[in-house]
Length: 206
Image 1 (cartoon, rainbow, N blue to C red):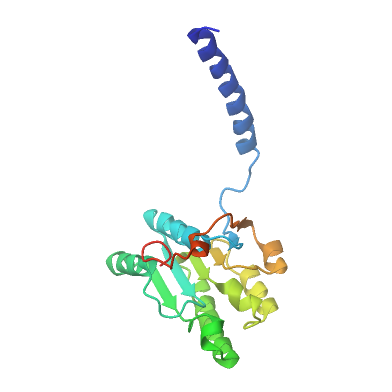
Image 2 (spheres, rainbow, N blue to C red):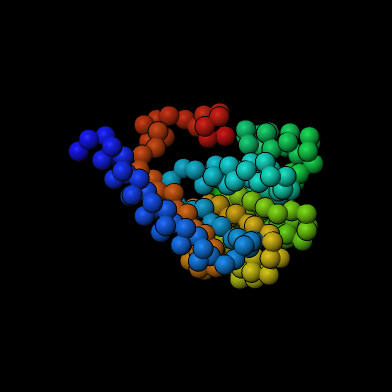
């Protein structure tokens, strides 16, 4: 097969592929919908993906909200950057309301109180009609340990306004939340440097 034949074969293949793709796109009838997205799984990258989405939304001029449920007062790189963008453009509402991981506090009452404060702030932001994307970072952890009533959270998420997009992160997402979501991504752990003795690093883990 000469180069002309190969090019012709490739063009015909791509024409067929484009026709299939165009037909699939034409079959989608919903132009815009606020999505409930869940990032879960044992692999690294759940929050990272959510903050990448937040950056994308900011690039389109959206106002975003972030509520962190379990990470305490860590000064993470994403927090530093998004808060700076918020100061410059006024499009970021960031709230870190956790007290650290549950094995650090070792106090269930404190964990529940922190989760409640974070959830109340999340509900407040869901009512802010200017916010188009809300990241509920590590909410899955609060639900896993029953620091918040699952049914209350599901009701509020289901009742959110039509144009609000919500991303929920954290391992062990509840089956009921997965069922309610529009998009679910599971990060699969294949290999992690932590297992080889590498500590959490600035710029990579936080």
